Length: 220
Image 1 (cartoon, rainbow, N blue to C red):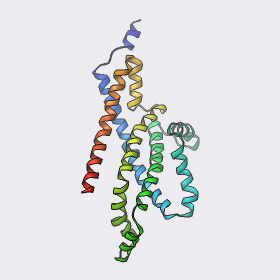
Image 2 (image 1 turned 135 degrees about the vertical axis):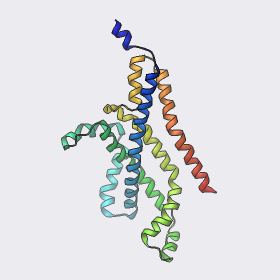
Image 3 (image 1 turned 45 degrees about the horizontal axis):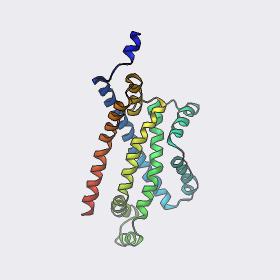
């Protein structure tokens, strides 16, 4: 009876610290996956734009699979079949791999759209000024196309950060998993989920506000 009373105890300051640590783990796995996934997605988007045969035949269908299949299925399948391929990854490693590829698949479409947003007359003008292909990409396509698709990229980043909660199915103790643990102990889902939601808001709101300020600055 005493063990039951000790287990089902109320929310305390240590639980808030526990949720804070889980929020940091959410931030870490999200930042790592979004950063690497954005770089890979930009490369994939460029390959798709260039219309390489192997990219169209091989890369595009693979990216479509990762965009279409629910993320939770990707996580579970990879985590269970990775050891068969000799990849002994923990829940964090598996989560980073899948979230990175998932992010890259989404960013690839965004990056391709950004390149296509730069009109061919402008690109021909850059080349006529003596710019090389890569100078054209760096000084013309990247600034103009990047601004055009920046809001879409922010949406992808915020979506991936929220989707990182699905890594909890692998046992990684991020914010959602920590909330589930505390709900089981405190039997107070409203309070725990409200605090977890506040943490998610605290992580997402500064990003969205900073992005809005950048858009206004670029519009001037």
